Image (cartoon, rainbow, N blue to C red; front, top):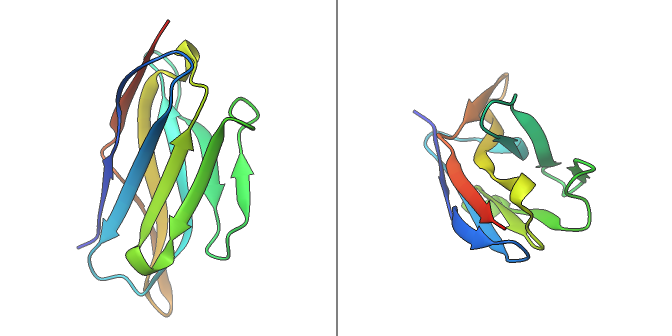
Length: 120
């Protein structure tokens, strides 16, 4: 059984910073792409950032220059450093990981989400 557990959300003032973490546990051969998505109230879930196992990163235009995604492959953990936060960054942030379970089988897993609230 594979689990993703996010942490690090909370309430912060505009202009502040937060660091989210997401740790994967269970029967994992290795992890391919890891990413962060967010869903604001009344809106669809959207991509925030992704990072490949080798380190290549991709960001949504709305967070470029403010957020940084990183990962520790030894710890099966992905991070999201969020700086210069804006009220429009308020959302539930979800971790996603494409996990290699066996040589021939990979599957996507999601965390339960962590709430980030940015006050103006």
